[in-house]
Length: 399
Image 1 (cartoon, one colour):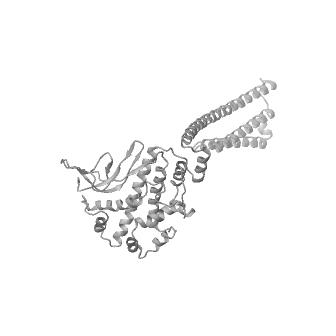
Image 2: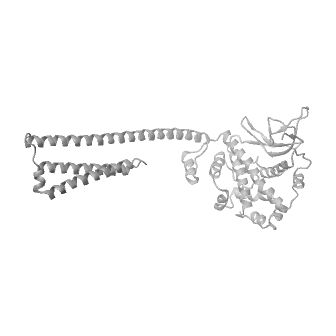
Image 3: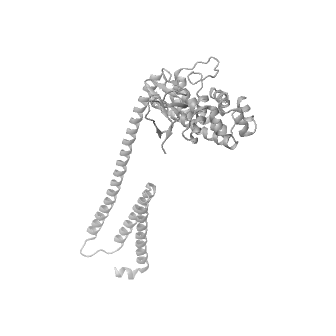
């Protein structure tokens, strides 16, 4: 070896330099492989694998070159030495291939696991589809019609159940409460006497707290918005247009997720547009509107068929939509959901009524509490009673 280096030191130095360079490259590739695992990046891992294999091949070629160009020990024949080197090289390659095979087997197992998971998801989706088809058949709807609605509006049909109606009732009750807030605030800003206004809606109601007079305004909104609810046309002239159960449910599904202003933008003269046009003047008195805005321009615009983009009218549209879709849903059932209202002065019944105030103090006398205001009507759906929300007059509340 020393003689070889003395004979051609530059070549040997270049050879050793290549070895060190190759080892450095191999080390860098291994570092890349490690970093590709955190965070896990399959593409970087694959690239690092290829780089390591390439550097191992280069190192193997250098080893072959050295063995072929340097003297072997005297005790071993050239043929045996060459054969031993080849065996060692093949064993090294075999170990490399074994690592690669294990890696591929692991990837195959992962893919098999993903395939099984997707198959389970397909089976679950098929089961849901069969269930949905059965539900639609019970209502006389085709799957094609249902999918058309879903693609157009970005939703999937719901089951027509009492629970769905109860949820819609809760949404309508919340919408009444939400609209009463800006209405009361604008009355305050316009200088209205809220006590007198509440008494004009329903006189002689004895409120436990002054703040409870807000229920008078919620009752006013409720009475106006639910007027005509028991009729399938909701007291709107439909030019003798008849609508079947399936059409009512289609309308509910199509409208429940839409923005009401977008609905009216697409068709301002739709049945829903006519509904809004009739209910807005009923809920908002002209004296109220004149005090709010200084004129009746918005009122006249609505009556004339327009739908302004003012914040107040948009708040009203949210209310109108919640009542409208509740009506569409009520008419989807067979028989129709029935509405019932509670008159002022009626005896309180826990079967048919629910107090909007929770912390009431009940007297131990035999006299039952009396209804002062109905804030939300009740409903019969099959054998289920959805209780009316009422405010009881003359009651005390615990602090």
